[in-house]
Length: 241
Image (cartoon, rainbow, N blue to C red):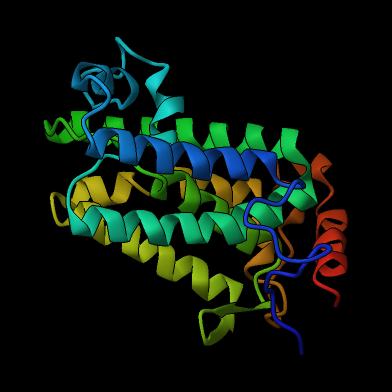
């Protein structure tokens, strides 16, 4: 049995040439964090790039820019940023190599926008002007779509082995709790992009694959043209299975 883990390409490179989109997202978060920490950027620009429930209609472009900006807010913000960048480096790099940069960028921006819209709608329902920020909304959705394609494959989370589907459950639970502490309804709507990812990735059949007696729901996947079997083959070839 083999586990998903990074594999070298002609030696170790901090920013591999094969993953320009992932590299850019990581670099943008590092640069904006430092610039905001040192107060080298006018704070009046920040609201234009990070939407809230009330400003989303006036500034719709911010639904695509918020994942590229990390606000400086103390030690906890730095720890959160480091973990999100680590996960993006591993997950984003792997998916970009498999999908190609153009498709990965399209998926990342699409899931960012969808996740932001769901959370903003939850804020409208609760009357909470919730800020939509950081990488975890699209990262969680990407984790779910990855797991929906190949749920029973093993992965190493630091030193802990687990199946991909359980890793997706853990990440979703953490995202839910982070917003549910403010309001349970916000917690539910924060998972909107992940729910969409589950069905886009063929989750109706993938998460149940291998369970005896479960009906195959593959035909209900609205994006079957993604050719799920070919996607799995690329993953397995990349990781040397």
